[in-house]
Length: 578
Image (cartoon, rainbow, N blue to C red; front, top):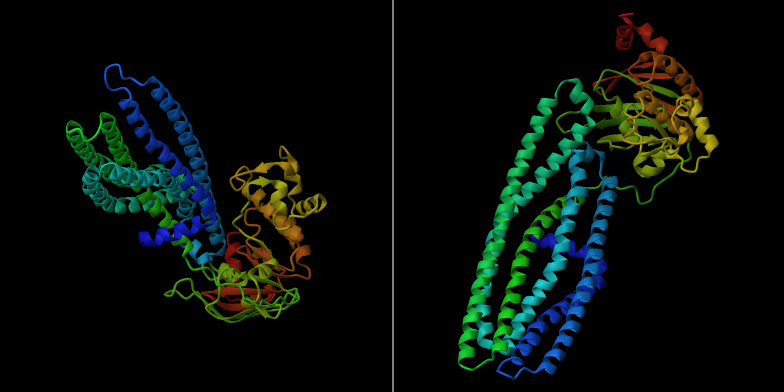
């Protein structure tokens, strides 16, 4: 993405705050006008003090009063400008983060599954923060810098065109130096943001997987991996900083030359009687004020380069293709629990077909168990039923309607889901159970916890249902976390259920009780049960045995055992040791 396109998009974010930006510009004009007025007043004051016995104290005192007023105006203008700039900057960054957050909800799971979560976090937090710093510096210093340069040059043209012309001729040198160096630092800033995202992703992985790292004695390798990324980041950051830091000395050198030329020409004019000593002071002050913004802008250019690079990474995320949108005229058929898969085909990658020509008819209220070896497509089938992924070929209908004709919210609201991988949000036990039903009463929450056999351990917690859990509930055992997820599903009592290894982390005694609770909950509800422990699916109405994306057997438990096929082999292999 080119700088021009990035700038255009950033300006589109600033458009809603144009009144604040206009206010900031007005304040910048007042501040610069006040600062440019001071040298003139000081020059007049100097002229009032020249000559023996010719000091005009009355005029000097009057000018001192004017200086005080001008300084107060400049201070107030700078204060108001800072308020406006901070408001605009942080509002734009808030809008940025809101858009990224909304985008994450619209991105297909295929994108999230193929990108490291730490890099996405880095774009949303670190990159936006860096962008905010650069944007604030741009608003604060770029406005006043440009206005100061233009106004100073204009006043010098009015006072003495020859001196102004000399300054104007030397000015492009500053731009040339700044542009020459800045064009070479862009690559390093871009590499810096990429490696920073990689580092954030690695830190995220190491923190989340610290138990595994320690369990397998991988601490040394983890440190080496981090040191390698950290070393690359330090190297490219030093290069970016080094080259960008050359801008300020380069522009200062040019500006010192400008100051020396102005001083030399002013001195000749003064000796010839063309200007007074006070006017010489005015020109030297203006030469200094004219040069100062170039030094500030050179620093701003460096920060803006970094900010633009970070903004480009955020825009790249925002430009990713959304998931297929919901049908503009969706259907919402009455809930019956009938599910049909007709010649469904799906693959995550083009070179690896996973499910091919898959057909299944599920009657209302049936319990469908799905078994098979790892990688056969069990969880993929669940992802397709929930429309986390769209089928490549074929159709899936729920309650007689193609799921692509329904809104995702409507479709997923018909399912209750308990997964093997538990997820709990930061909050109280009560809030986590009521996650899918925010208006649930206390009695309903407790009843769901009792049905999931979670009530007893919740009562033993320090604050019971008001106990706050953080970090995905790491203070709880894996089994306790899973019981809370089961209670969450039992509270919603949806028309259909999906249980994907829902009791994998629960002890056998509790699992038997949970299975009894599930059996009661599944009565009259269409249910899909993914299981590795085949002892948990004996009561299923239909057991689908999958292998390489196909249904190789289906029937009830006793029927499949009697056939002595693939299911019987799987079942007996689990109990062979016993």
